[in-house]
Length: 362
Ligand SMILES: [Zn+2]
Image 1: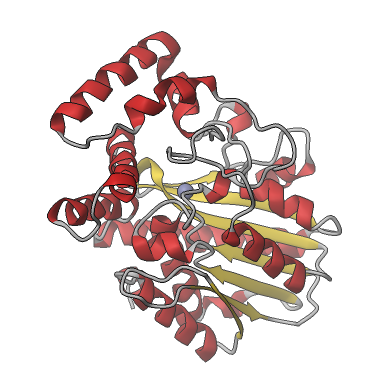
Image 2 (image 1 turned 90 degrees about the vertical axis):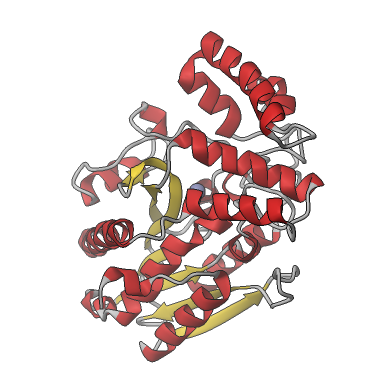
């Protein structure tokens, strides 16, 4: 089978495929049903598959659909890892935990956010403490999320956004827009005012499965940033922690860090890796996001803004709604053989390096 064969066209097909592949490989399955229904009334769930010794001390964890609509990519790698038989390469004593569609609502509805409009990768923050302030976002919110969505409104908002870019640079603009914000629940890159279902589910799955783990590798699959088809290994462990040094060693120095300015991603607040580290104090965690490029950033951002408008003010079941959904699907999933091939090759290489890294930890 070529890599393209591992990809599914929607959440329902992806879920069925993952479950069948995991079962055929002999995985121990778990399922957590999300409270929201899918667009066709279907049940939505995060599914997990564990393969290997039940009390393994070294575990490779893969996660798909942290940003729902990005789930096509990670889901294909997870299913493909089983279907191809590559899971058999795991060194003795090592276990694999695949977490499929941690944000099933976003995957099914083609949204980057959860059912409560929250960016899951900005939600792992202390919700009892004062939230970080993002003045740049506050200034841009109205322009980013206009009441109307048409050519005139987009052109008008572009002026405001360009003026901000002139003043603060492209990097300053990116940090303001996508670094995370806690002031506008109806905005984009909103980190939430409470833990989301996906947040709670992720920590529950990890605590339940990794109580005995000492070394944990996490690969969280993302799309939408960077050159088309290229998989950037973004390590968001802070520089003064062992995680960044371990990731550098495991992945042959081929990683980037938002903290060191070497990544296409800016620094984030409330990322899920920080949440996972805190939830597993007994384990040494080495995590990366594997981020694949799709379309140019401007197009991705435009699709996100359109989708935000659609769910606030528009009709999903309308011509404009369908056009926006096609736009967002393309922004996070390139339905083309060459792209899928690149995704798969890089994922296989990365997961092999993670297994080697885990096996070599003392
Ligand atoms: Zn993402």
